[in-house]
Image (cartoon, rainbow, N blue to C red):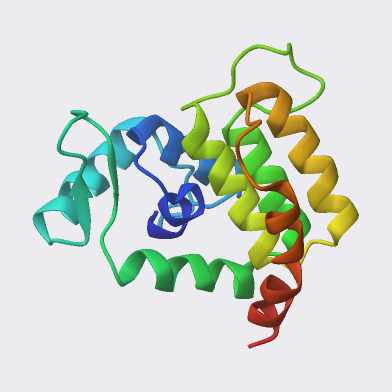
Length: 162
């Protein structure tokens, strides 16, 4: 559950964690698929334990607390291939090209999470540029530094090898 939340990275409601669990084909200890109710219960337990925090200005939006968020995020790269992580994130934020071209979930935060994933998994500059072009249209990001993001890809590939 914590890894699915870490994949999304930013503040998000429980149903996105549930979608990430499904996209990653993660199961409960019993081997059964997570239900939304089980995710909400797990979120409440993580909040009570101080492993998750509430967003002060948006009720129902949470994220993992540090350093668990970063640790769980890095653990994803040892458990899943970059392709699986990318597909899961695209599914969670509904950026699939086969779907309608409506507004993806959670506006800019999820787009940034997808860009972060590209950097950390060592995407090539052409892959990052293609992702940038799609996100730029969806989010109207004319003010972000695309060349800077694409240059950082080399840094991300070094992190993947550690």
